[in-house]
Length: 303
Image 1 (cartoon, one colour):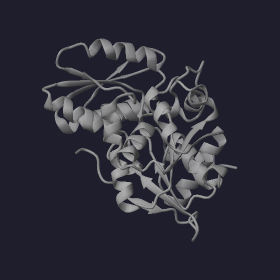
Image 2 (cartoon, helix red, strand yellow):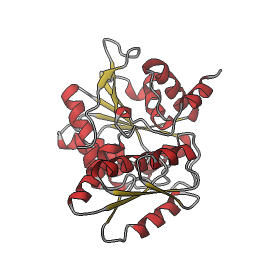
Image 3 (cartoon, one colour):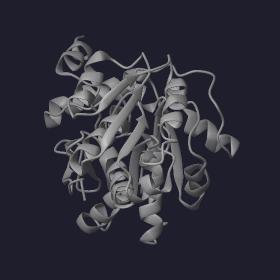
């Protein structure tokens, strides 16, 4: 097991006697995000099957988690990033010992090269979010949450491609907790999941336009779109300004840095959003993220 058991803590300012806001601190994972749960499991199984290399197309958290997992397992990792990936993120991935290959202007082009490289017989392709092994790994956070807070009635999580949400749904279904309400959070410029739920199937957005770049999946995985129907659920789409507010207030409250992709979920609690009206024990997954700095947060905090 490459991930750690993360704390579940009460938010110091938002909890009241009638409604408790819990924070699942996935930002404390060794890779800085929840992604290590799924990537760690997939890479571990690849190593057990005799694979020597892993290749992951990702400009951020998935690639970094894969690189961290590969280093721990003694696997060779190639992370394919598009030209839009910041140099600071590339450097952080490379520091793990992974090979960083810059290819294409967008993720889809990076993915095409990754698929080609993964055709080698000793190489495992590690997708960013759409794989049942990833969901199985991510679902371990539900095991922990239910141990620490068995009375949880509402889960709040950000949705990019749907990997985190699929993990949450997988875990809740395994524990027969279909009574738990699901709040799926996105920003206005990347609301591919809300569009999919409305249509009843994944739809492709024409473009991504948001500060929450980690939510930038043009099309989400199909499985969570189907399985969220088993739960009472709400799709919440907030502005970039709301997501940034979540990041800034969380930095003040917890002295921790997270990406806007995480801030949008925190904003649901900070805004006392109607989606959580009537809830008693709300768990917000603090999914984390590596593409954030104190300088960015300081700039956003300026009036």
